[in-house]
Image (cartoon, helix red, strand yellow):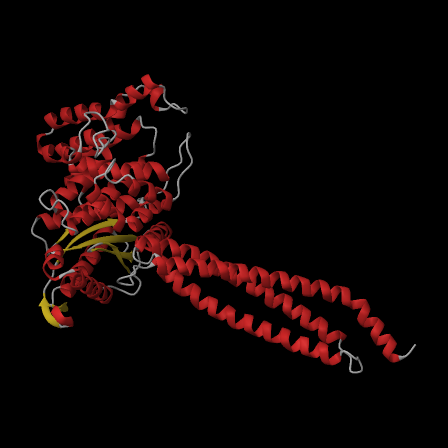
Length: 522
């Protein structure tokens, strides 16, 4: 047998394996095409729907998933290609008649692998960019609520490990709305960007500065000194540095007619609320709520000051029994109350910024709404257990009993108001929400069949928050809807179930609703 014949037979004996390897590589390339199609789809959604932050956040989640899939597929292609190239090199012999064809195929395959290696680097850069979009505020570049919550969990874990303290500083700009009203949102956005930059310079590199929403920021301090007194002193020192950093005037650029701009020297201060937490506290929502409450205390005293959360003087303590009563006999989780109070605050703040019902909204009123929404279903404590916890659909008589919880809640809160004169304003708001959140804009709701502005503003705000949360929550009788499906349903009910003006505010806060739901999920 000639040397050529021997080489030819050896080649033919290895061809089936080579063909299988080439087929595998072809399959990997097809997977890569699918990943690229997914990325193109998500990028298209980002372009088409980039007018809302919620859409950008959703698109970034899709793009993250697709990019990760692309990276995996590309690495598989490179690995498979390297195997095929090694196999082809092994069977190419100098005297083969088809050497030139094999070498050409080998060269082309090598080019494909090199392009995939370049694609892998590019996808890594794209993954970093999209990851930035998913976890950072698109205006200031600071961490958003999602990343803030993750950092807060890390600090809590550090506290437990090292018996250390952390602090949350909740910051709200004083009179920010006046700037927006007088000079427009572009000036407001420019100020927010510069505030974010100053905050970062005022704290340590290890601390977190996040944009919470609107003109609210949160600063997280970690690894404070080992005892509570020193930790408080250290956090107060940082809070004072923040006030000092924000005090100098800002140079804003105001858009004029005919495309001209003018510079405006603008001074803006802030109200700061601080809460210290150690290894014994692990509930992120409580930490931020307490810092938020302290901030409102600072704001109520005129702003441009710092206040620490003090549980002994907190109105939360006076309401604790009512809160506990509201959840003890409920068929839903206490997290439903935590989420809805945050939805209402977010929606009310946006409405205030948009001059929706300006005579009915203020910082003080928004804080009252925030403190009392958790009592919206307190009337359910008077509903028979068998009905409240029924897993199947209610019969008509059972449904009539269930519907009485709104008016029953009003009666419970009226009794509490008579017994707590110092809580009159808070409990008046709570009564409005409890009795009004099942009334519909078109008059088809209950318990009184009120319509339009006959329904209290608190009730109308709570109605949107309550329905959104019910839709995204899993229950024994229903599956959880996706955030996108729930938002579409809420918007579709504008003018029938919900106040159309408040729905316009909701459209601009859908991303924050989603983040609240993620952070305080069941």
